[in-house]
Image (cartoon, rainbow, N blue to C red; front, side):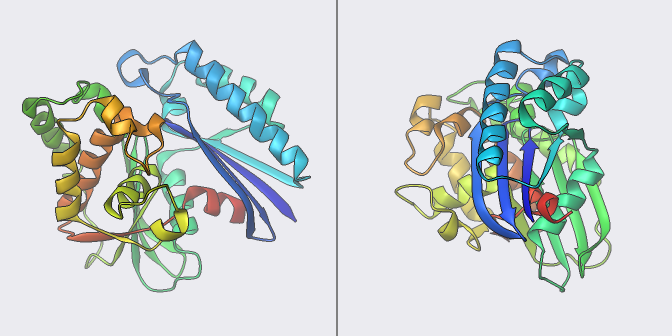
Length: 291
């Protein structure tokens, strides 16, 4: 059976098509759908139209692959925006399936399922999105602890680091906000090896590897240390958005939120006393395909 899965995120729109669990197509496009939602509670109509154009193309791609089963979910921004239900109606019309607005814990469980498929040992999955970050702990495919916190790359950009270059006081304010947001995380037992999923971690990994162009096969399984993340924060802080966008391996559309994403990544590791994290290209979409 050919399954198509679409993730309507706060920052990125993503598509995965798999035939009996084997990936045959994967796409991602940054539209910044949720930018402004944290401060206004509303979607920007221009960003909505850009997002719907991408989703319409995804619907056509699924037609081309003759997908048997379509699944779609929407996450943090659609949960928060006043226009969320109306947007879902519009998205359903172009996708050929009605997206489901999932809760933070559901998002966490799907990310865990995707990142840990085939693993039996205990694992911690950290999924940094544009609007929220999920921490999920479990083993043998079963989640025993999951939390979703309203702190992500786009949300932190709006709240604390809107300027680029970023003044030191904004960076420190962002660090305090992240530390406060993640202060209540308490994993059951000893912290197991951690897997970092989604665009912030994969983008930082590609930069750390100094790739001339993004290569998901080299990113998958690479290790990011806390010191390396802090070094990238120091590098990104004095850069303009245009300078950030020029980094060879980076999707230029991620440039406005990359510094905030790096600060969330730093805080997620520091809050749990982790020195490093393994980056995975398998995440919520993979979990959704297998659901």
